[in-house]
Length: 312
Image 1: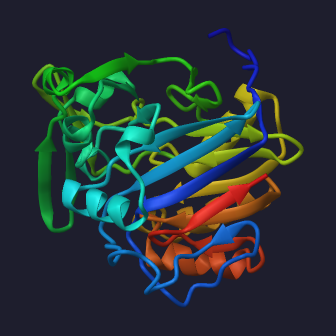
Image 2: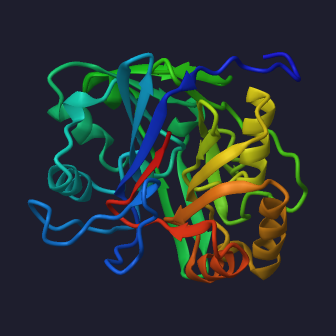
Image 3: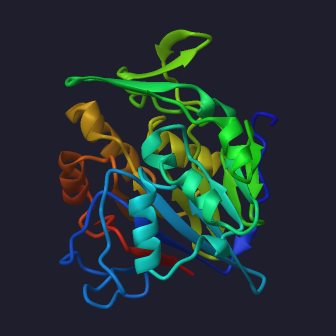
């Protein structure tokens, strides 16, 4: 893609992002009528489960047609399929699956999704998702984990590997590698990958952001872990689409692990962008969530399992 090129993104009539799996359940979190809807206990066919994983069902309305994308598949098929059943959703109803990056809390249910479908499924991902990944944490080394390309193909995945911005399901843009525009957002040093047998710092070129544009409302920016930085991701979405208005930013921001300075710098960066709704969860971290709420008391909400964001 040429530098400075703007993608022509279809204007959706509406878009819904439903949190199938996330780290939190809180039945006392309020809804925002017409925009954010929380699940009410006792009205589901079975209880929802929270876990350290992420999966989102995205529904787009375009020219009278409905398209659905499953973004990420949680850390485990047990959690993913429990919650899909509780929410009365089916993997047969999705047109495409988008894997945001190559960490197992995002692809843990992928094989089972493919196994349970009656037909092959288009799976979009960056090819670096297949590289072995590991983490160096205060509690020691974790991993490596490897997503196996051949196993996905055998299970029925029609792999669509992208290294450039790509339109999926006719209405959503996945970004390709995220371009950095602010200096304070860099991948955490404990994240590693293995390339040609050698361990190196992970630059997270495989992590992409999903972008939609709703008529008269602006962009919906859907992130997973935001290892390249949530501010970088939003700014890159604006650059790719030529649209500056941001209706909603949704996903995990990976802030607490980066320390207080990163949290404060990110808050300042988000304040410059005039975002309608900030729905954060998954890997954001408790301290960062508390700071975001203090900084954005009208715009911020915690992402909980079963939460539905509706932009129209």
